[in-house]
Structure formats: C-alpha cells, structure tokens
Image (cartoon, rainbow, N blue to C red):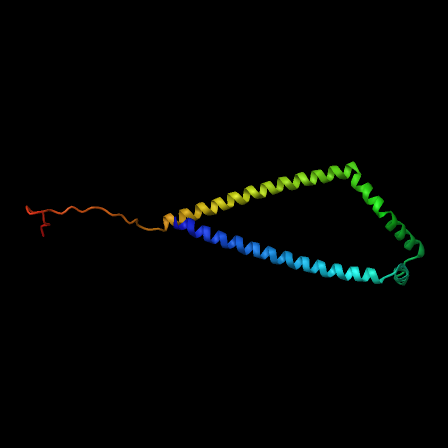
Length: 151
C-alpha cells in the first residue's frame, strides 16, 4: 500500500510539472508569434507596392522577375483552392491523418503500459521493503484455581 501511495504522489507531481511546463512553453510560443505578427502587420501596412518593387530592384531582381512574383501573388488564392481540391492532395492528407491516429494510439498504449509497470514496481518495492509484518496474537498463561494468572 505504501508503494502505491508513493507512486501516486510522485506520478501526480510529475503530471503537474509537465502540464505547467507545457503551459509555459505554449504561452511563450504564443507571445513570440503575436509579437512577430504585429511587426509583420506594421511593416505590411507601412510598405507600398512601389517600396517593395524598389527594394527588389535594389537587391538585383529584374522587372520580369518582379512581374512574375506579382502574377503569382494575384493567382495564389485560386492556386491554393485548386491544390486543396486536388484528389491526390486529399488522399495524401487522409493518409497522413490516418497514420497520425495510429501513432497516437500506439503512444497512448505504450504510455499506459509504462505507467502500469511503474505502479506495479512501486507496489512490489513497497511490499519487499516493508520488512517483517506486525501481528497480534494471544498468549495463554496458566491460571490458578482463583482465576488469577500464576507467576
């Protein structure tokens, strides 16, 4: 029983520490993404098409290359929609989702068996390390004719 109680306490603390760490990491990631998003948004709002073309020319791009990029940007929504509706891409996405589900199932089962093994090891360690067991037993003593214990 003591081994199981110690295991439960340690396992609970480990889960709490892991959840706290994941939460802190997620909050940090969201903070970085939000900060970067605002920088990009501010830059995009303050940059005109002429500024972008001038910067591209400054870095050595020809007018033909700039026009190609502008055409690709105009056609991006239609190209994206076509890529989404493509049956081959849908099949790849469904296959990836199925594989991810199988991996998640395997990870869950291995986690369960690992936790069960840790619990059984804690119970066995508590049983083995408990030492001699405490037992109460009755000791009969000889009595005299008056019902008193003889010394």
